[in-house]
Length: 276
Image (cartoon, rainbow, N blue to C red; front, side, top):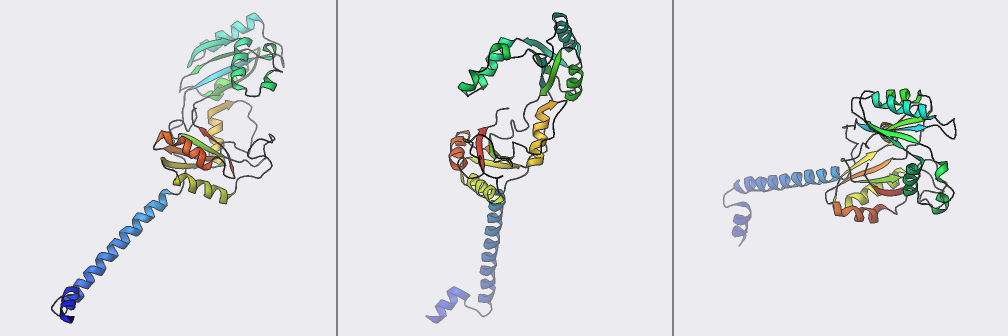
């Protein structure tokens, strides 16, 4: 009985058992290393990665706001001159005039506070010219030239968002300064903490259908915001409002699950779709 056991376990001849035993141990070690490596890959995937380097959208749309009421409204001749100059500028496409009525209709579609909307009238709105810019146009140079035209109050260029096509959802964090709106999830509290970020990230990776998860810090978020909206007189704002996790979904139907998983966690201001 003993010899049979030894034969099965170690082999019938002296020395062979040690060789087989080394092979078994070696195989177990290889499996263990492979398991640890696979576990390491899994752990690595659970760490949010920095935002991709690019691409950064180049083309954009401009808006040239005409004077009134803060400065004298342009005359009919000035309005015509503004439109003519915009159409003549290289790289400008599809210039169109927007009346007060059109501005009001667009404004009313965006405002969710009915009480506030009731205090605004069509006469309170301004007029503008809008159009497109080809990628080769330097947006700041365009804005500065447009603002030198008589009758122009301000101009800016809006470009597609950096995250469009790179992520499907944005999980935005509580900012440094507490919001004034008492209904805001971040009202009365401080900036999101590292511990809260870790918990949010963990919950994201636990949600089925979530693919890559990026984290955009204050520096990168500020760069994104400044690229998307180009003004001539931008006030330096050390508080970026788009700090947070940006999620690429493997399954688009998982958006609701992500909202349920992290939408009410401490430190989260809101979960929103990346649409622009």
